[in-house]
Image (cartoon, rainbow over the protein chains, first blue to last red):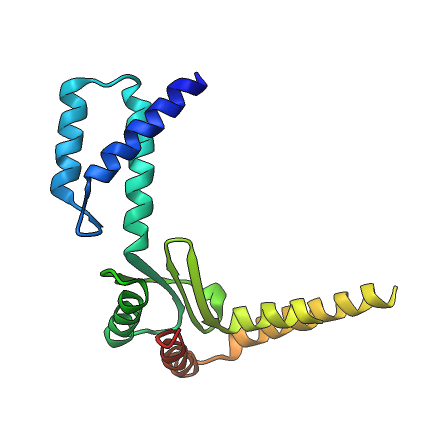
Amino acid sequence: MASHAKAAQKFARQLFAMSIVDGAVSADRVAGVLEYVEKHHPANPVMVLKAYRRLVAAEIAKSLAVVEHAGAINDAMLAAIAASMTKKYGRSVTATARPSPALLAGLRVQVGDDIYESSVAGQLAVLAASV
Amino acid sequence: MLAEARTEIARLVVETTQRVLSKELSEADRSRYNESAARELTNV
């Protein structure tokens, strides 16, 4: 079972590598990969596709800045954050807004596993941890 | 004992501050704060 999982992971990584064009996930390549899997029925296709989906989702998350906010933000702020993250990561990053009243005021930006925060809730958390 | 009291007091202060700020901050306050936060985060 473990060897099946390992083989499925390895194959998924190969499929994932084929899905990247110019450092980003290509929708055309992903469609081609899915077509290939459907046509050729590799061993453990569900396992392969689940692993493949995880890899693709993680890669797409790296190109997306989720901007959580309490209070209003505008398109100019989102554009500035997207431009800044694009420069920082050296790849095209788009920004999307998500309301988060728990922040009280301010922003929390997540790109992949990285989090950047400037919020009242974050400052209070730092304060609580320091006393 | 003293350390525990200190931690508990800090927790209560932070909790109360959160509660007060969530009611007292106006939309204009939040908006201004967000502009400043956006400037800070675009300089990371």
